[in-house]
Image (tube, rainbow, N blue to C red; front, side, top):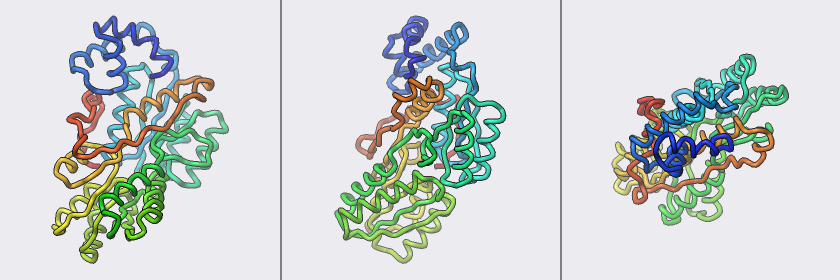
Length: 350
């Protein structure tokens, strides 16, 4: 919760006829609130914004995320829109072709030309993107990354410690495989620093702590489910004794599909990222064992905090979100999507 919105909680609670704790849960999308209370808080905040608009809403803020990048990205986009509406922040959302560095750089420059009070974007590890980001920073544009970082460019970052997430995946995979066997690491999105850090973190941990586990790479050049399916299927034709699959980024639908068709006598352990409607089903059906999750609503909340904060307050903000370990046994019934329905697409991709 930002300093801008915190003093408004009591007013919202009075208008909505609920407790301040309920308002806090709705604003931060923490769940456990009835639809009636969510509606009351949302409407009260909209009325309050009309009566007493947040100063930060005088500017226009940009969010740039990849197109067709899966449900977790759709959740993030919906969370940005939902929270911006609640807080009276004028948000301009742009989708960019996935893994297209040239197009991302063009959109960043367009946001600058059209006048942007701040830009949050999912970065690509590419010299053109880095150069463009440096240019915008030098011109005074507030700029930072979400989900995947661009180290060395001097930008702020909001998301997981992805190397730690990868090491955690390695730790869990080592336990699930009982310290030996063959593990396939499916990774793509070759321009996403997040995926590189997860892969290297997992490999580093397994190499050090479980030297009897052999690691096989499954490279998907476009972070694509169909490609993941085809490449893992080809690997399974040669490696009948596969004991584990770690899916670093997208493509988990393809990986699960390939494993289902293979009908191995002993199914390999499967570890992946981000709880969505799809991966939740995979856990319930025992097609996945562990999900390493990052709360997209928390990322959007922190990003909006950073966008509207003064330079002094921004220095005290912490952009790291915790790594959540989700299994079939601690899976909750809700994904916390109800408040986001209005802004959420119906895609089934992941």
